[in-house]
Image (cartoon, rainbow, N blue to C red):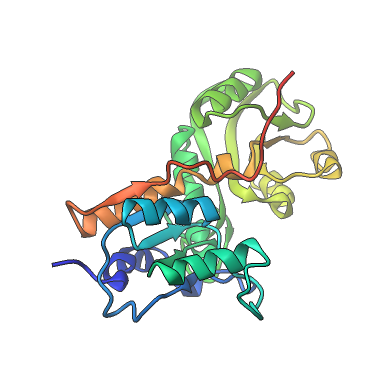
Length: 266
């Protein structure tokens, strides 16, 4: 018997309740072609974004649920006439009976979510929330320690290899070596001062502007690893949560590219 759409989403909401999202966010069901409590789920497609290509892939693969990190809808949709990508995605999902669900800043803030998984991949230990929220252990960003002090240039090479970065941007190297590192997957420029106050020698995030790099003021090294690249580990979290609750179920990672940013090197 197929699980319902809601049953597939249940472990995600248990790990990261929607109440943990930021006030401006729109976590949860973006498109529901029927009652999620009643509608059976044929399989799940995981992606950072629900793009037109991702929905087309779900149609081809016969999967009627897309779980993504970034919400599709932030503003009200006034009409469905196919004039924008969002309108076309909503219409196509409804046409083919595909639900779209997003777990965004609630999953950023969750223990074991975006930032703790990023810290784990980089080998950080004794991790803790960088900017705590109202719930103990829940908040944005993460700070931790490497097993030993390493040269900063060596850690930047490690970071590039481990995250598979095509390139990275960074401020002037503030310290010859690094041990305490802060991370915030996706946009985290607002936490530069918090990273410094936490004693981080290096802060990894994304979407930094030119003048954001100046805010380092020689106190720590700021690194922009890319929005997509610092958040894509969330797909592993989604996979693990769903597969643990529903073993032997069709869970696919999107094969089509969904990174909105391209790179040309040289």
